[in-house]
Length: 135
Image (cartoon, rainbow, N blue to C red; front, side):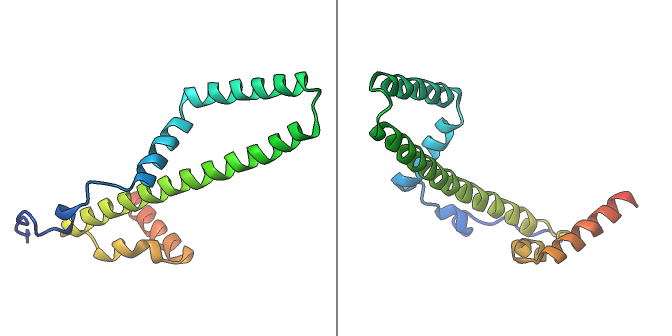
């Protein structure tokens, strides 16, 4: 049994908001940049500059506090931005997989709710797939 193709505008994805929020765009750009060679070079340069400033100032207390607070803040902000991007991308991938399951008449639609399954259920399903693959 094949389903008739949906007409334009019937599927919920046809009405996507193609204008993502500024925070999402910024988070995606920063996440991409943070994983680049440029970010690694910038980190090394920033470290060297910070060490030179500390040396020239005889490593005062403000220098130590600045390093401690500054690095913690940058780390926290990167964690938040990267997690935001990961959550967004993960949800998009899950929705794409759900669409493929929904569109395949031979697929079990229950698989679309697998994110809500317990660890034991996931292991049971994984084992069943493993058994089927080796049979």
